[in-house]
Amino acid sequence: MKAGFIFSLFVTSAFLFHPGLGVSHGAATDEKAVWNTVGYIKPSDKELRKSLSPLQYKVTRENRDEPPFQNEYWNNDKEGIYVDIVSGEPLFSSLDKFRSGTGRPSFTKPLEPDNIVERRIRRLLFFMKRTEVRSRLGDSHLGYLFEDALSPTGLRYSVNSASLRFIVKEDLQKEGYAMYSMIFTCESREWTYKVIGSATPPKLCSDQKD
Image (cartoon, rainbow, N blue to C red; front, side, top):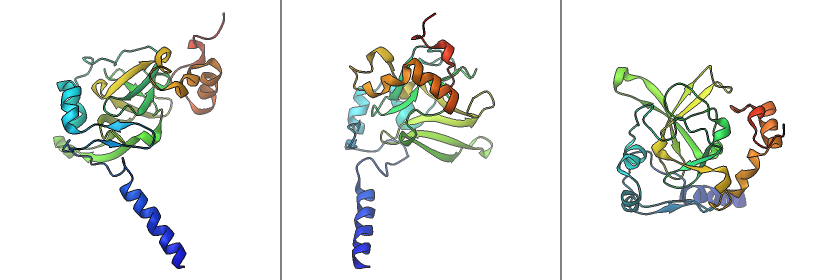
């Protein structure tokens, strides 16, 4: 019994003090960088004020949102992955991106669900509740999660372009994301489309021969 209590105490302590866990969800007030064991890092607020554009800072740290159809990736059809502009943690794939008609990058599901944090928030307008989406380590305000009948999964992750950095599939290896190259092969895409559900049909696979 004593040994079990000590082990439980150890696990609890490890969770509470593990870098990257328990990150605040408010506006940016941090002074130190935060990192995790995978190698992604959340720079200090002082560093972010220098590295991010004014718009990127307002969106990710001050929870603002971009106007529809006036952002970088709403109509981006290139293949690749989208990572957090703050920490670099992988968030979404172009294979799960679809034209929602909202003027914002929209995805059916995350590339790495563990890197996404969802929380219910109350907006002042009509006291409506919404589901906000944030990155786990970077604690960046990404956008919102909605139910959407046009999405294969019934869900739409509506994301701000300013919260993202797009890495085209040809650059994944040199950018340090080589493990994600395999998802853009025809075999992987066909399996994903049939078994899991993807926004990109296999007929659009560029690796297929005529």
